[in-house]
Image: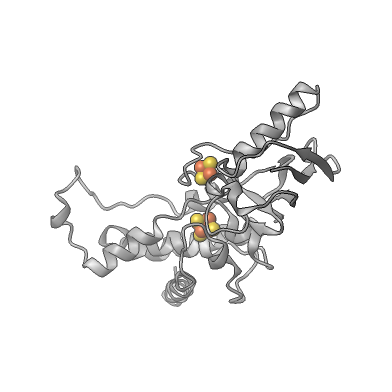
Length: 247
Ligand code: SF4
Ligand code: FES
């Protein structure tokens, strides 16, 4: 395939940015989107031009580092991460626009790389659990009902990629926060700090400048791990209970 790429270039956090247009050829449909960008960067290196900066680590859909807005959709046209998106989703002659996540709490570092350390600070504000979990127990001896264990496991798949924030018109991180609150809130080990954790994490979410949830649902549609919207109901329920009880 031969493609036209319109890519956001920005040399640093305070530098002005702009869309630059590149032509890239010999793109195989078996390449991932990031491999296609590697291919472009090889061309740029050969020409002595600055390669496009973008983030990645595992390239297996598990670390959450890759964060590209592709044609206005967080992670592009498939329900997956940017690294697991394959070029077979595009066709010869396509023009593709690639931008970084757009949200004030995720400032651009360079080109397509944003600073997502706001998520780390939210996690940090939740603290640790005081329950002594001992050494790894035999799986069937864990005292958690199966439905709760499965729900905790499913929401623990959130990889902190930030697509939910990028997709949300309010720039809310409620889906991410709801996933983290539900994960520990469902398990016996998470109960001692359940109420203080939710108030601290909501306060940090707001202090970072993320917006409020108005139930639009773009977050869950963009989420590569299909975290369900009802984690936000759980978040709101836990927060209300915590505040009512003076936490
Ligand atoms: S909830 Fe989904 S979209 Fe949001 S950070 Fe977690 S995995 Fe990414
Ligand atoms: S690079 Fe790890 S999820 Fe994409």
